Image: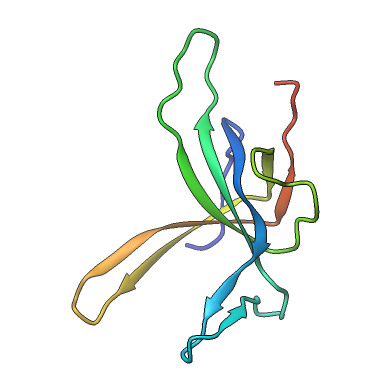
Amino acid sequence: MKDIPVNLGGYKLTVVEAPAPKMRETKDGAMEPVVDRNGVQQFVVALFAKLKVGPGERAPKGEELRVTLTCDPGEGFAEDTRVELVDARLNSYQIDSPDGRSISGVSFKAMGLKPARTDK
């Protein structure tokens, strides 16, 4: 399954690494920007996700997420900025290595970022 919609509204998302162009290493060791099938450059942002809790409750340990953004999020998303993801999606993956090991997990993708609402 691909591009499964995900609701992260129950989490506080804080930028830990500002959005930057997503880069990939080529076979010759050079770095090149990652583009989608339509030639649109991809971006990546690192977020710290922590569960929102009610008064008097203690939040469990948070998690760092790396999210691929399908367009340039623009300015204003520096480190420690609270954000929300626009059209967040989840993809599962599995990578089989030549030595027989398998690595699997999930990756996050979003259309972009927007400042978090502060009225909650």
